[in-house]
Length: 223
Image (cartoon, rainbow, N blue to C red; front, side):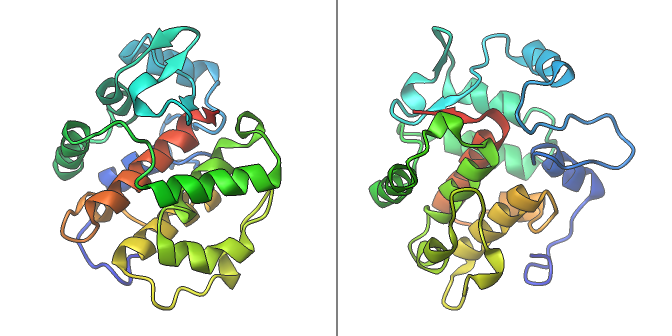
């Protein structure tokens, strides 16, 4: 994404973003690898921040009723726990705005919800049996109308064929969502934190989809 968006970036911010991407192996630092989120070190570190952190999202209940083992957690505390090590002021400002304006829906639109749900039903694999990575990428692809048109024929039960997706006609938000999906799926940097945080570059709905996809990739989901 950097060849299209030329904002300056700090190495520290890049490393903080990569901490949120499952399977990413950071350079020379003891940072958590969060795929599957259940490793002892990762769990202990998260519990220091939020002892009642739910392990999964309930898509049927959405944000208003996040629960795990009978415990609830507020949306703001959930996001704070996930992004507490990200020091970007711009990102934190956007996260605060997202929290303040949250209406309780995990999806960005009814079309988004419908597309995501239809694929899950057609593939006949329960959400709780899907990898968090697959769910996060599917969540992103189904968020944008034009991106979904480009991606839908290349979405499989256990993989995505990024190379066959024709992105012509995709706007900036759709392209940012695509690059976040690629980042999560490959665990390589295709979009930078300063790009995600830039409200003049990425719209509020695309930002919401990206942030929620990171939560899914990190914590998983269920129905």
